[in-house]
Image 1 (cartoon, rainbow, N blue to C red):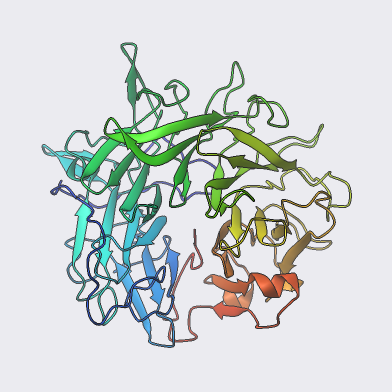
Image 2: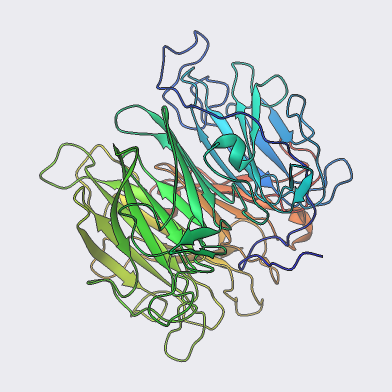
Length: 518
């Protein structure tokens, strides 16, 4: 029986696929796009210039294997739905119980052909090495988009950690692929960051279990980075979980370390920020942040888990012609407000190219005029999404939006219904324009107990995506995902919310935790 447990909000570890190590990977800079692929649109797997939507169900039963997991891709423009799992032709894998395929995913154009490619994490896969079954070692799969879609017919590569980076070792409980972030740097090179929060790291002659690491690849550069790497803030410690959460833009990326001990405060949490600029064969460390950092509000306390979730968006200062800086949102779901335990909090921090930083907002539900109250177990900040809705102009409060998950929030009649709290984080008064969205009040559907709305969020410059994978509502009992324009949330448009639910819109009427996004 397995003895390790996941951090809050994740699936229990069960037996996974036996995956043999495969060859390495190199990402190529963009080349001339195929004639039938337009390129230039994010998450466009068939290259037709229309954005596609990815919705995961890591708890789905596949070929009789419970929680093997799958991912569905809804092609934009009504061009159909693709279902991808370890049973997909060309995957060279077998679905087995507890693999958790779809626990994480990221999209980018890895091969420069103009069609986006999908990376899917299965962090609870077992890997066979030298005849030994390494439980929950983890794996990732890169599924390449084609002009006819994605899935069956796609070129697919599967990697264990050692298969991806031969300088590393695949080990049990590494959770390789637990978090993923991918994109294109400002210089036009595709990049991929893979979280390995269960990695043991040797430091000073001692190996620290679950200290964590990331695998970073940009072009021909591939490197494993941990807190013992040159210039990376902090030291490896047991249960740091470096790589548990990831975010990034074309210039920067950040790594959450929610288990980081600050002084004697266990699981206080921290975040490390990097530039994609390569130095001595690795991304450049810029700054480490915690609630004890100068200028950051609050104080590091045991169980805060600062960095449990992170999100980034570009920031253009008034003296620049491009987004030279970045805004980093950090969730602190374990923050206590006075004696109110685990009410949660959020910090928003501006990062400059030098690594200089300025906190622009730090708040919780006790702030004056902010909707709702700070209640024990709200876990505000378990998920955060920050978005710049117009990166072509100087950044002001009018273009920056922040969505904060509050999965433990109760309604007046429903416990743990969950909510999504919307802010303009650059506002002087955060309560002036904030709003809480509940199912049945700002979101479609009806709030039911233990829906945990706010546990799954992702967003871009146009839309906010809200998943409710644990929905108990009869009509959406397999899970549901909502796509909401930011302008609708602001009240300036009335486009309407798109609802993705199994059994409608070409989606198979099957699922268990449909709606895992971000």
